[in-house]
Length: 293
Image 1: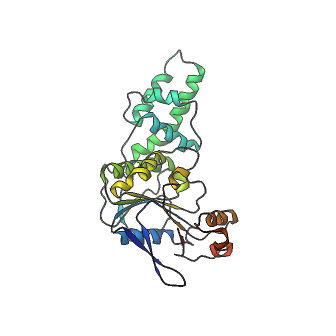
Image 2: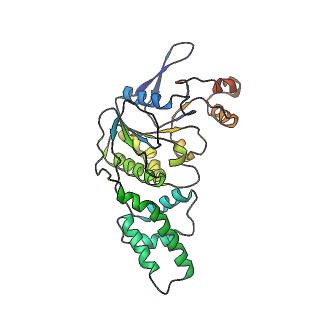
């Protein structure tokens, strides 16, 4: 199947089909029907799907099969840098050389932490070096206890239909690591799989790196060759990585109320300005109603 039935055009009743491709779905939570739409599209596509539950009390994907969080540790300097950027919500700049030193010979984050402690125990250590290594140790201390406490699955088994990985109760930093590990496994070993990233502005943001963003960029650039696609779920398109959005050929734009976001939505429609819908039409979209681009 090269296309997926989305639904039917309002007014004419004509069926609307989407090509299999990377996709972004936006709209106000609980007033747009994003999750129901995404689940229906995965079922109709015949592909396997992987989605993530990240928030307490979040009700979504009722027909999905629940699977445990999957995680495998990494310790290269790019990975550690992206973890720190996700924690700080800003770019890592001058600290990079210290991170490279701390990750030499390490295969896990625990070993990186042990290397840092070794540096801090040196008597002849410049104040600048001590300050940077102290900060790096503090960042890792945010995630290491949780990584050691949680019993993660060592296998990622995806059944037909939609699979939902429940990460409720995990910190945002550890959620980043779990989604990253899952994307890596899908990218390396699977075919014909859709991965849904929730709250895309948090996991694949514009302007800074995260553990998820690095592998997501690889997936949107190369995953289509093996039928593996990334679908972004977000309340708005603001703040999502432009490099990833550029690779999404399908956009489903749902209800918005904030005026600037409404105008951004209208600007994405591939229509002459005079032919675009009005602001009121975006604000009054119902549940399950989208402009499909």
